[in-house]
Length: 517
Image (tube, rainbow, N blue to C red; front, side, top):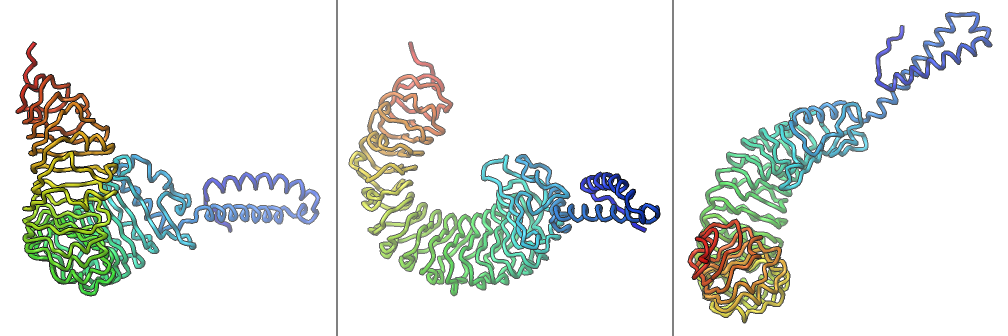
């Protein structure tokens, strides 16, 4: 006896073909005496023929749906946990189709899912997913990589199923809303090469067991709510090229964990609650380290001389700490540095003469420097885009400052110095300036002669000696402050509050009192 089970649309097509074949077969059997004389043989033959057609149809259907049933089930369960998908990212995920061809899916040559990649776009809510990460993804037993990045609204705890995937090597679950602790048994992912949980809401301490993931080359835990101290066990991660623990609430001192980190290029502990000095062990990173970011903590003491040995350093951020004393003379050796931020500390003169080939961004604001002028090595840079020297004891005429190139400038902050002269020549040379801040100086020029470029968003000229009218060009700005100058005339129609215009000689009109006729 033959038992037939439905195989989908392709089986129906096969049935139609068999019906046509039966008619054709009846015509032929009339010419075959043996079969014609034996009705039983005839119909047994027909049944066998029908079964062959159905079997071939089913095989064809299975060949088309090449995805392993466990992979398909796990992925469809993940899709069912997604509440909203505004960009229809998962629209191709349809049961019965080849999941190896679904959006975001990569398969091996044996047609098993190896990689899940769903990536949104930063600051674009239409490229997002809301919902939870289904534990049914544990069915994807051959998966070695998962990328769920910038999807904004994925919620729930750490996806514990990852701990049981024997081949998992790359985990990038970034910029979502996952929360809760990082599991203490995270060490089960013994083959892990990269782990990134940045930009979520994970809380609690970093588990010391993370030090057992000795194959890690990248560890990114920044932009979460992690507390506690930096575990000493991290010193076992000798293969790290990148270590990000920034933007958390980690406290305590920076431990001596860096000896043997021969491949580390990026170290970011910024925006935490770290205290104490920069540990001497960091000096062992000098041969390769390119990014050292320790800003926005409570670190103190002198800036160590050994930082001058970091000749491959691209970025050094020590801002918003309590560093004191002088900037080491060894900084003259940092010839390749592009981004230097020492702002908001207690640093004093003299600032060393540096031999930078081309600085991109410099911030020395709010220390106890008396620079006198803008440094020559800054003025000659042809690639600088951000210069911030607020309250740096600069006493010069702005007209005398002639930077080699103003094309790339995005931000210039010269606030709270003793700068005189006019800003017109400088600003009228810039085409892509976004912000200019010069509050608290002695600048004197006609504001009406200032060219307001389309890119300009922020302009602060408050507490100067600026004269003239407020030009209509300021209406396109996002932030403006021209208070406490010598401006006159009617204010053009703007969205700004009265505080932006107060303290001038004779400005009038909304939001100030009406002009007198």
